[in-house]
Every structure is written in structure tokens, then in C-alpha cells.
Length: 310
Image (cartoon, rainbow, N blue to C red; front, side, top):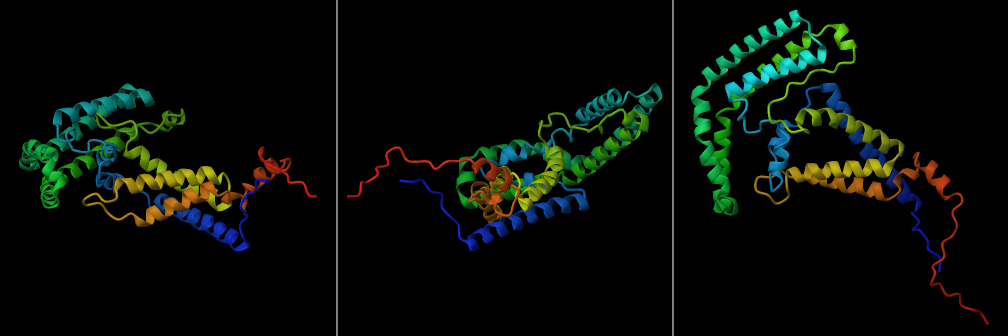
């Protein structure tokens, strides 16, 4: 008995090629759009995660609860640490180091003004932390639909107290980072030094900033590989896993989760492309596949019985 691979019809092959190209084109255009428009951020998406994995995704957002940014002393230390790291990275001169201190002083004044303006709201927010923690740890608030809705409404109003203050602080932090990096001369940058990134204390190794840099490149790379049919199993598997993570941020069936039907459909399509040898049909994967199978021999099942004809 001979082992045979399933054969696809001509129309099935055309459909498989079309699926690979369409999915690839979608990924490529998504990545291109993010690069062209600029300012892509997954912060809002990760912050809105729902379900049992919500905390995991939210932990990728530095200072998700605002505890660091709303602490003036912690922020002052963070500015000093960043200025010191940037000075070592670019090998700042004494004059440049003096300028960093001037920038830190100006930034602290801006930060102090924000804390002063929003102090009542910040105090109310901090006083509400124990209450919100009790709500999250209450089983009835999680299991009873009406009470869970009430809990989410309370948390939403609580978080909105400091949103304006956090926006102002984020703006100040971005301006501070830009100002410190602007001190580096072309000669210092030409030595191969990278852009100094301001990170809040306690930021995870893989955070939003890194993710936001990777995703556009990832989208375009996967798109190109699928369109030309090169390394299709790898590209399809990577794309499927990525889309699976997107689906899990809005865990199906979780209260308040948003529909992810489109992502789920494309996820299944990517896994199908990965495991169906889609790249060897009108794709560059045909070259290594044909080389590999050129000298292959027919495999005979060890238990095959050849009947004698009389």
C-alpha cells in the first residue's frame, strides 16, 4: 500500500494562492499605514484588555495605574537617572551636563505645576485605591453580572479622575526626553550611539514602546513573505500567533470584551497557510521544496501485503 499525499484541484490551488496573497497584502498595508501615519501606539489597546489575561497585557503598559507618575519624588529621581544614563551614552561634556541640569530644573517646575493644578483629583484618586482593590477582590463583584457592571463603572470613573493629569505628565516626559537627546552633537551620535529612551521606574523589559516599534516592521515583513510565498510556514505561524494574542486581549466571553471575529478568522487563515504548503504554489517556497523532493523515493508501508495473482 502506497502512502500518498492529498492532491488539490486546480481551483483549490488558485483559492489557496489568493488567500495567501490577500492575507499578505493586508498585513503589508497595515504595517505601511502605521509607518506613514506615525505615532502608532498600542497603549490604549493593551490598557483596554479584558478577561483573565487582562493583567498580563496591561503590565506591558509602563506605570499602568499611574502610581509612579503621580509621585513627585519618584519622577524627580527618574529625571536624574535618565540624564545620567544619557550623559554616559553620548559622553556629554561638562557644558552639556550643565545643560541637562537646567532642563531637569525646568521640567520639575512644569511637573510641580501639574501636581498643584490637579492636586484635589490626585488625592481623591489615591484615596480610592483601597476601595477599588476591595471591589476587584470581591467574588460577587466578578461573578454577578449586574454587580460586575457596577464595579466597572466605579473603576472607570475613578481612573478618569487623573487622566488629564497623566496626559500632561506624559507630554512633559516626552518633551524632557526630546530635549535631553537634542543636546547630543552629530559627532556624538555618529559614534553609533542610540537614541536615549526615557523609562519610568519599574517598566517591564518588553513594554509598549518596544512593541510599537516592532509591530509595523513585523506586519510588513509577514506581508511580504506571504505575498511572494517565501518561508510561508514561518510567516503564517508567526502571524497566527500574533493574531491569537490580539484575540486574547479581548478574551471571548469576558464581560465588557469587544468582538474580535475578524481577527479570529484571519488567525485561522494564517494557521491554515502555515500548515498547507501554501508557499510552494506560485511562491518561492517551491524552489527548496522541489529540491528536497527531487531525489525522494516512494515510501512503502512496512505492513503492506502484496497479493499474488493466480
